Amino acid sequence: MYRHKKGAGGFRLHKKRDRRQGNNDVTKKTTPAVSAKNVEMQFGGFKAVKDASFELENGRFLTILGPSGSGKTTLLRMIAGFLTPTAGEIYINGEAVRAVAPNKRSIGMVFQKLALFPHMTAAENVAFPLKMRRFDARTIPDRVAEYLKLVRLEGFENRRINQLSGGQQQRVAIARALVFGPDLLLLDEPLAALDRKLREEMQLEFRRIQKELGVTTINVTHDQREALVVSDQIIVMNDGEIQQDAAPSTMYRIPNNPFVANFIGVTNAFQGTLARHEDGVAVAKFGAVEMRGVPGGKGNAAAGAPVKGAVRAEQIRIAATKAELGGLDALFEGTVSDVIFEGERLLYEVSVPALGAQPIRIFHHDQDDFASHAAGSTVHIGWKSRDLHIFVAR
Ligand SMILES: Nc1ncnc2c1ncn2[C@@H]1O[C@H](COP(=O)(O)OP(=O)(O)O)[C@@H](O)[C@H]1O
Ligand SMILES: [Mg+2]
Image 1 (cartoon, rainbow, N blue to C red):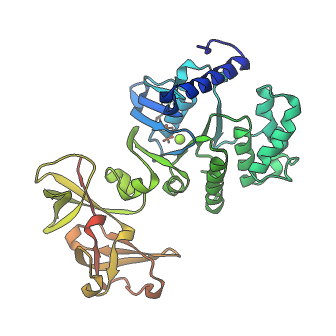
Image 2 (image 1 turned 120 degrees about the horizontal axis):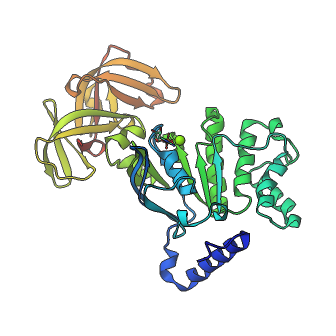
Image 3 (image 1 turned 90 degrees about the vertical axis):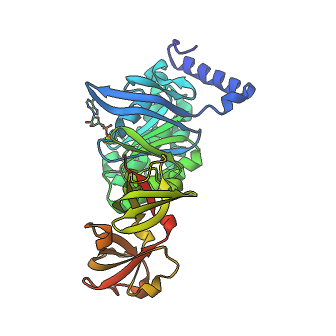
C-alpha cells in the first residue's frame, strides 16, 4: 500500500503498519522472514535456478551451499532484488521483493569484494550508510562506535581501510552492512579469499554477531564446513536445483540423495541393485554381497532397481583382524592402497574387491593405534547398517 510512496518516510510508515498488524493478527506471526515460491531464473535458454522454494524464519541463519555454478549467487541476487525471477516469487516479510523499490529495501550485504572506501577511515566507512539513509547526524557517532565495538574494532576507528588487515577489513564491512539495522543480511562468499585460519575465525565471528543481533541472515558458500558451523538451516544446490533443505545435523546424518551425501563430508559410494525393503530397512546387493541400509530419499522402487550405497569415511572401522570388528553389520577384507597423514587423523584408502574398483576411504582417529596398517597390508573393514544409505538411482 505504501510502496508507491517516495522517500525514507514511506518506508518507515510501512514497517510500522506491519508491526501493528503483527500484534492483532495471529497468522502474521508465522510469516517467514524470507520465502521463495517456485522461483526460476532463466538467462537466454539456460535455467540458472529451477523451481526453488524455501522458507526462512525470522532471526535464523540460512546457508545456501553448493559447487561453483550451481546458482547460489543468482538466487541471492533475486532475494536482494537485483534480479527479477522469470517465474515464481520471492517474499520478504510477506511482501513480494519486486513490489518494493530498491531504495526501500532494508537489506545489508557483504560480498567477496568488500567495496569499502580505501582512503576513508573505518568509522567513516561505517557512517556512510547512515548518512545515505539520512539518520540524525547527532546519533551517528554513537551508532558507529556501537557497531565497531560489536565487530571488535574498538581502537581502530581512525585507521584508514588500507591500513587494516584482511580480517579487520571484513569486520568493517560487516559493521557497515549492519549499522542501519537492516531486516535481512545477505552474504555472498565474503570469506572465500581469506586464508583458512582467518576464514575459520571469521565464520565463528559471523555466527556470534548474528546471534547477538538476531538478524535474519542468508549466507552463500561452497565450503561445506562453513555451512555446518554457522547455520541454523542449510539449502544444498546443484545445477540450479535445491537438493535438500534441512538443519545441519539432519543434512549430515540423513542426506536426501547421493549428491548431498557426497558434497557434505567424505562419502564412499558403490553401485548395486535393490533386493527388497524390510520394515524401514533397504536391502541391496553390491556385487555378490547383500547389505542392509537406510533407504535414502523417497520412492518405493521395485526389486532389481539400480541403487547407490553411500557410507561416510568416519563411519567405517578398520582393523588387522575380523575379530576386532565385533558389533558391525557389514564386514569386508581388503588391502591398504595408501595411508595419508592429515594431522588429527589418518586417511586410509583400502581396495575392497567386493565393493568395486574405487578404493574405500576411511578416517582413523585412534592416536594409540596410529599408522598400524601399512600400505600393502591386508585389513578388515566394516560398518553398521544404520550408517549405510541406500539411494535409488535417479
Ligand atoms: N547474467 C547471466 N547471464 C547468463 N548466465 C549467467 C548469468 N549469471 C549467472 N549465469 C550462469 O548461471 C549459472 C549459475 O551462476 P551463479 O549463480 O553465479 O553460480 P554460483 O554462485 O553457485 O557459483 C552459471 O552457469 C552462470 O554461468
Ligand atoms: Mg557465486
